[in-house]
Image (cartoon, rainbow, N blue to C red):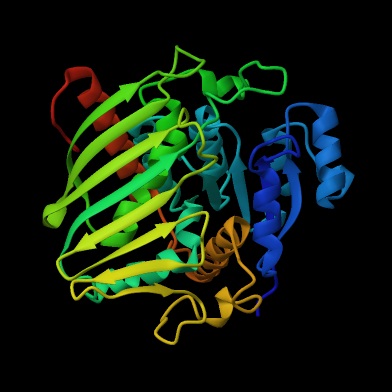
Length: 377
């Protein structure tokens, strides 16, 4: 196996929502090593993060410009973990510095921002991938293969929901739990859509290999922060006559993260629930119902050695899914380093996927405002 790829973080400090997850996941299979970073704008957090992440103190930098000045020639890639409103400029700056970029979703706050990034990417012939970690779950990869093989028949409906309760739940003192400040402002696309909706768009395309064509949606503000959208319900028409039902929310009391995927075909159906991440519930039109997991003899994907860091019955979960995603990114990045062409694998996702998701989310917002069906352009 090749030497671990050397990466730096922009953002992702110990006080962030995603920093530790990315740190653990990227090093789990020894494909990457975190060697530097500008982890926070605050010096104390920056230093604390370097210490806790095992990064040399003199390689924790106070700014992106200083990080690029000192480390550009020492890195194989940079991982962007700043808040979404900062992504466009952060990504462009790193691409112009000739560094391959791995960006946490959402890539940007609008399709126009994504188009600007795309222009720079083409100009620099750089490498850019966006992390959509849920497709790192082996069972979702198994489901993708089942659908491609026609084992559920012609797919007619897909229902994906992602209910959470964060904007309705109270703290121990009975007050609303206040999220990060940047999540309390909506831009052209509501922040909840950039948090959750991008994942749902991505899973729908990943599983079906089809594209959204038209949507009708309703957006609400039900929770403690009335200035932002916190609940979205949508019907989407996808290519190949697939009807998709979408719901994502941060005001669904009782759901920590109720991600659920249900797929209905002409001869069978499948259901996956994230809180039971290793089981796929299958039904067919003869009345049979089965559960597929890593130990099933008819498994084709999830029984592979790479997904079995420990034997079945000892559940793998969210961080392992992220790690699976990073293994795939490492393979694509090695390919890029060989011939400077951004050849991506089936589980690594580029600017096209990210921009299409933003276009769909913009169509959903327009539909909510106009109370009508809107084409995804």
